[in-house]
Image (tube, rainbow, N blue to C red; front, side, top):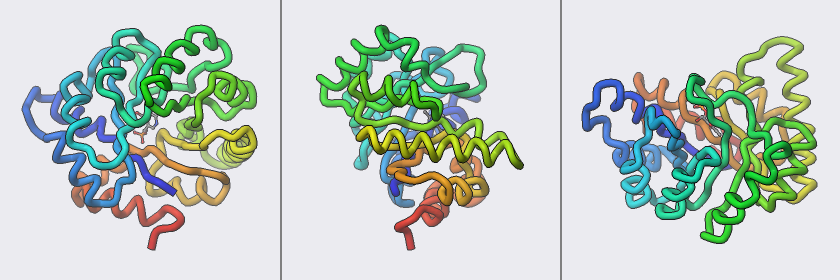
Length: 239
Ligand code: PXP
């Protein structure tokens, strides 16, 4: 199982003071040294953390695949087509939100998403859709021609008890359905060292997990390289 390390919050720290540090290319190198299989960044419409120049600098610096999270927005699409990340994950975005809330409505926005998915695929960018674990969204992703989905785990991360178990069952069923539909199954949002084991035990067919906030928060105490290594150690296939 692969780990995509989201380094948005390294940029959050830099933007808090408008300093040139901490360096994002250095964060990329440290995450790679810790075993990151991919680097993920989210160029938000409000540019609250990652900036346009980061996208191009990280594109140059990265040795593992780069995954760009992006809203279905013409300006961001234009930058994505110039930077050519290896992958793009289409996410919903609202300006006031603390972080991405809820999945993309791939079924309801099918007609608006289709040209964006097609343009990215034509440019050689593998496309993922960040969706809720429900059959109609998986079916819309398949019809849009996206080779991958990312299941939104934010709700799981915020629940406990029976409600959490019910959400895990929903995620497991969705992973099964997406796999049967021939889609690569990724997952992310709110995953942490403490909630990852139960998630991994319940949900099949996972290819890549995208994790950011938990890793960067841990890195404050032990460094990014070690924080990534500790997260990797929780994934199947790691010694
Ligand atoms: N995947 C997607 C699509 C996201 O939008 C985010 C947050 O930017 C993440 C994964 C990572 O979430 P977290 O920072 O909570 O680990």
